[in-house]
Length: 387
Image 1 (tube, rainbow, N blue to C red):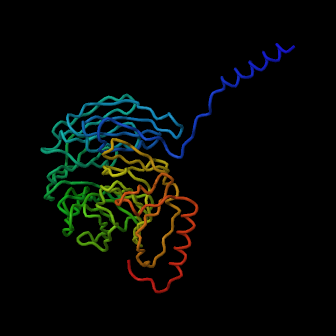
Image 2 (cartoon, rainbow, N blue to C red):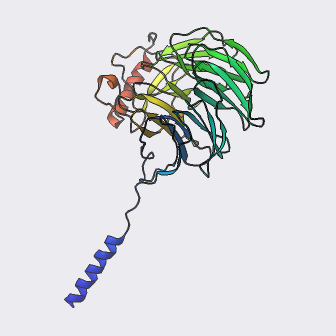
Image 3 (cartoon, helix red, strand yellow):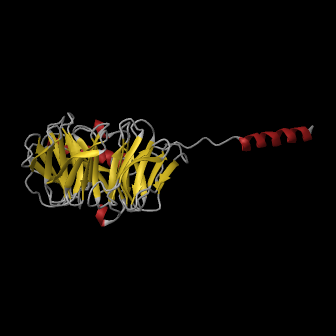
């Protein structure tokens, strides 16, 4: 009898040992490690897929998941001869466009991972920026300030204009697909009319490079990041001069991505990704960081839940930004807080303990309550001064 009981016990232990562990579900996908610095990343418009281009000219396609261990490399391509500067998916997700320091434009078939179109000498100098206007039209900007607009039905450019004195860092277009805006290292924003195929004007010069450009506030405002850590705001149809500007206490604002009509994320060379409200102008806090590493690019996922970032640590990181759209900002200007703390807006944003990041705090309940109390006290002050 004792023998049969022992046999049953051993069977139970074997069954327990054979039960597979439930996969761990994370708040965000795990970091993706590459073998070189990643310059550019882009999310697929319909699937949980991310593209990346590195300084060696290689392009990678990954599927990502919040299930631990489920991130997978789908394919890689080494067609570019030099550093890949920008990758973008077509609106249907079937093609992946890329530009490079090798002056070429490549178009890959996403499913097959094969090169389908190559424009070898698209510019006379290295290409730095690209924008897909629609399924046929795209724009490219190079290191010497030349803008080209291409029609893939003809396979040629129908605009070839040089009005900037330095590199074009970023390009955007209005909802009507009529006005193209460029940010440049010469400190100006360029305005181009695609429909009329002509240059309209340059803005006045700003201090430092303009590194990025986007349209916000339902098309009423244009926002530019700058190499000196300021954000410049233009009124639509008031492109000549800025209507507002403010510093975000960052070394630079290298890349900006609109999250809502009022809130954008800004990445910096200090390795911190800040959430910023535009009009009223407020730095809301830190979304995440690559500790001590300059961030090259940030991108928002198709479901707006994640922000991905790539930096000089050769990592692609994912951040949960699902709470950002619910953030509200008061109109009046608060008094400056002496400690200049950066409120942590995600569980992965933290205080690194370095002077560079001395403003970051952890998102514990105690800290959150403390900050809420401080904000309530601020809200009750009627004599609040200017920022």
